[in-house]
Length: 169
Image 1: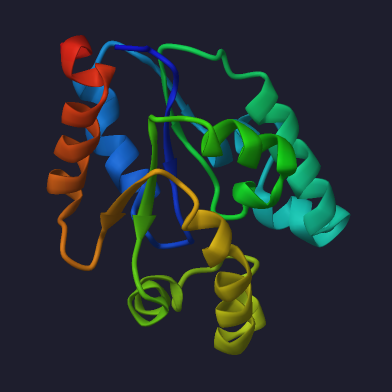
Image 2: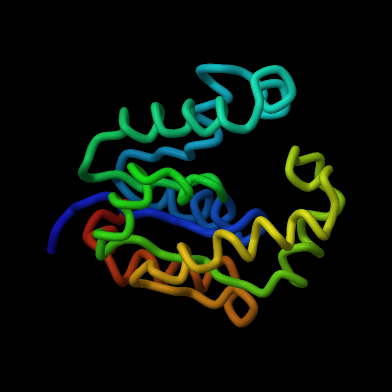
């Protein structure tokens, strides 16, 4: 079984970070939450969006992504990461990429009270962003329907479907 990176992909509120946080302590693997890496190296995502704009944030996201080793890692991507051609090409060719999918109403319920920069634009704008990204997400090989799956169940699916099952601590 290949030990190429395992990617968690999905829209804001899909459960990427929750699934990542569930899996990371259970396995012997490198762990990268792309948003946390950006915060660690560049500061608050809100501040980056406010001072530099979304396009600058996406460049930082791409830079952090390309610094991740190609093997033996669990990677939680940001919701918009998929819009980068470099990131998209890497995950679309991976048999270890998982799209944590859900409908926009469920996603909105989870994120509406958050202080995320894109959420502040309002529900209509979030729906537009979701619709723009959905066709990209749908190209990912493995899909987990988070409207019917708990975080724990999704974590087990990811572990049991990849080399992570042999890397349990």
